Image (cartoon, rainbow, N blue to C red; front, side):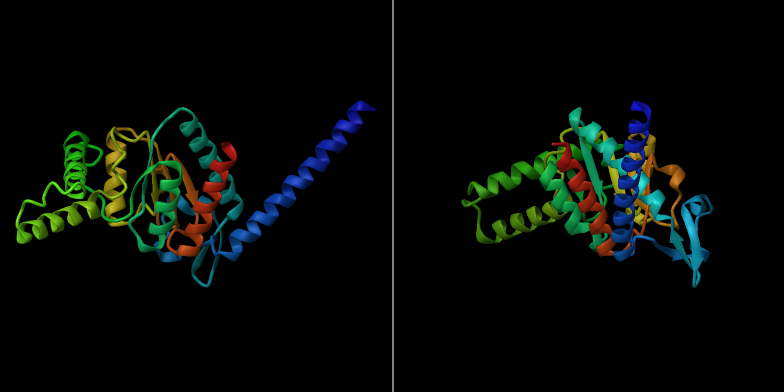
Length: 246
């Protein structure tokens, strides 16, 4: 009798889980997470994540997207629990706002402008420039440049603004990140970031589309990586998952 009750409870739980996944996948469809690129641009290694091709556009299998997204969130939870650092890389306009929001909320580092060449492979040198920027900015805010002429202060302020644009989001990156999260690794600057992670064996999480190579990514999330509404949904899902962990 006990075995029968246990079996019935298992079947009920499985039904609830299935319904929950169905609801989430409908949400994913509503924001267009399933839309890949044109079939002609498909990376052969990505085909295992494609459900069908419609009007020459690849349609991504959202059941796999959800599975890999949950795995990425679980991995991030473990990293955070162990005190590891995560660097987000998303220089495209569609992702900048969402990435900055989640990074500031969980004290992650982020790049949402241009990738800095050598950030990872020449970290000692780049981190020295970041520290210089922080000192100059602090000195400016404390009025230590007031003794300079107006023209000199204008030049110093321009230099600070240039450095701020370059190093914004990296002020707390005092050591190499333990994980790098990239949105759309096929972008020019993002390809450079991916190459650097591979040289020094930093694990990578990435939202990637049908034109990308998933075998270069440790935790791939196959999905539409080029529209703001799709990216926002994924980042919000990650944010909620990390909040639940607290």
